[in-house]
Image (tube, rainbow, N blue to C red; front, side):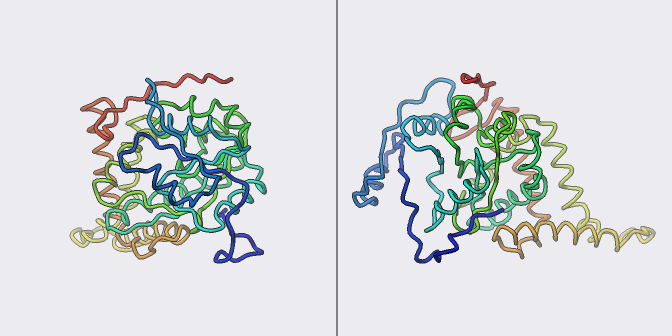
Length: 335
């Protein structure tokens, strides 16, 4: 399922959805964020800028910021979006229409990712491969099992009643991947989780170089496997078997002339792996030709996994922006 612009108006001439407020939290910025946003608003009264309060003990910065925003918001729908997400004309209207049609308590949108450098192109589109390959929408939408839950923190739209029922950001205050935790809790509470593709209406460029890609993915990768290192190791081996071993076999199989499976089996397996990567790229507006480099992507993801494991062993948690994050089990304050 994907967001679609209004059928009665083209994207070029569509006007922004009117009934909304924008609350920007200036979290002790040093670059004049608040002043820049105020100037860009051109006096629009729908913009409110609030100063971020000092970080409370036991909280991660983003989660504390979002809780402050929720406290200040007045609407029935709470839409949390990152500062680097770009909203195209008609995007908000499409989101509200989709949320209304699906009766979602939590609607998460998978942003269309902008990738420029090779490190971005080889790694960032793998998010779509994981979501489309391992979490089919019908399982996420139709089954009650929290294991089939996913969300994207770049765009989370809650009905206020649902947000309050699960405890808001208080319940995920120390979670690195708070979005996935939210998705699982929503399903566990019997509420309705829905996902949608941004389809070019909601766009984001996550990182701009290899170091950003490596550290950003390493920050989340162990938490994405439920905090279990063994699951990360098993997943790494699994991806080697699918995306790395077949092309290596295809390239070197001639060295073993008695191998009766060569070259048909490694060729079929290699093409199958490339087809999986290409189909997810096509579905999410990424470069289909980059599927040819999937073996290299698998190697780079191994480097990322190794970085995460090194942090775990060396620091006991994630090293992010100069500090170590060691999540604890959160206490849900709202029943």
